[in-house]
Image (cartoon, rainbow, N blue to C red; front, side, top):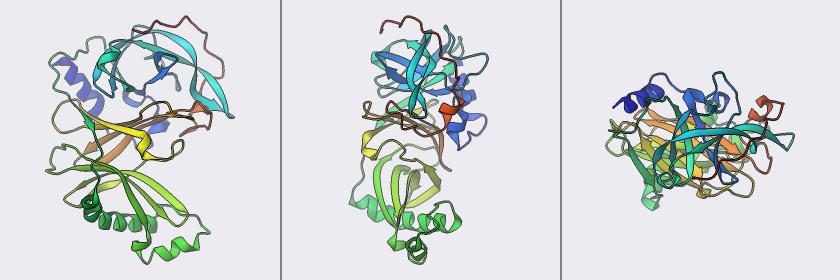
Length: 312
């Protein structure tokens, strides 16, 4: 049970900041990508001691399960960040482990040598879209009310010169909302928890959110999902991973395959109080700069290349 104790310490001790991308690698959680046949963690924000060093271990959670991987070695690799629309060469940890048990990699959690999955009670679940007409009938009134409130309080910003947006303040029925994804998710303390991805437009302004609902009511605030690289939520798949199996899951979203201009990773902590973003990242192969200015924080000197590790 030692492994479960470690995961509890990683995930549940202190609140994760909402502005997750400013904390790349916060609590040892990193996005994992496949690059040129290798599974890698990019060293976008180097720290000492580095979790990217050879011999370190990561619990990799993917589209089909979770397993422990080892850092076989590091290598200079492109794709993790751009600067001035040009790819940067970053040091990346090359991971070796049982890929077939994980599927497509999503996130990796840095774990100590003593960590084990033996005796784990973790619950893993692939989430499928169940949105239908009843979903809209149940949740659309609550979404309209929440968006109107957020717009008036400044949480849903609109363009200063958008006169039409000001008129909508008086009538929330004019706010256009779609529910692009929704699925039931077991949450401790809620009998009918439902997670959804909502996309709303107020005149020329648009916002995409991950939300939690129960009994036709929204719980907590919008967990913002900016569409910096991809146009549609349909390009994402969703899974949940509950480390303790107690109804305190993490919801992960990821691109099904590497799209034309970027690969995305999302992580949300979902509790009875709402959903909170803890990770968003993009491997921007088209150099559209992705979600953040992390490329500006990347080391200027290129990493020394090493021989690639054979795929396991």
